[in-house]
View 1: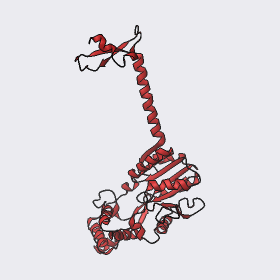
View 2: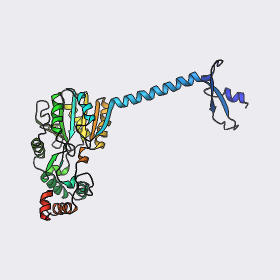
View 3: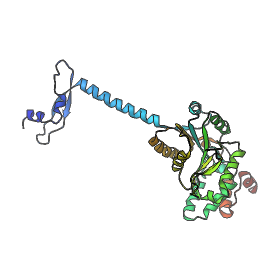
Length: 323
């Protein structure tokens, strides 16, 4: 086969045929022919190449715009940050705001649970891992949840929640239910009372009801309780899906505050499919709280909890150690 035959048999030769006189020409390398080992070059007009590049760039730009339009996950360390000040004007009567509760709005007072310089930070996770193989540990976790003292991560949460409600948004708490929660009598009422005493007041009615089960026939399903959504026996994403089915007016925007980025990514994956504008705020304020645990106090707190089920606050444990 001659060189001319090879060129004539190229499957995309016709794309480049035409008069190239007066044009600036570049060359596209043709892959090595397996039979001859020869390499060929084919003239390619700059105009065609430039047009092709422009089409590719336009397609990429459309993809980027589409991605940004669907959702954003934004980290922040304070409800008073520039991020929050920029977000607040976007929140209106068509916005649903969900706020994770643990380590977002509230956190334990004890320094055993501080993030910084803390070798005991995974103590609670350790208890949950034990409970996987020994369900009796769930009772110990429930006693810890019920008896440890809690505080606001930032006092400015109060003003932020009230401001978002004033702008017309539906602002609700979101609380995952774990097996230990089911061991606390009237857990929903207990958590509501705790938040109420800290001056946290969510939108307290949906569909003109202050307390209801999403599906009355499902005793383990999600519950709405005075402004807080409890997930029941399903995860947060499924709970959101079910909630959107029962509210009379679908939001055009959803804002979710959580300290767990994975939760936000899971929400984002769903909201992309339903084409709702979404802002995921990865709130990390609790990681900036000052203080770290005293090792002797922390060891005593853990030993007493595991052996007796009793929780000792830092000051009580310090007195027992004559500190």
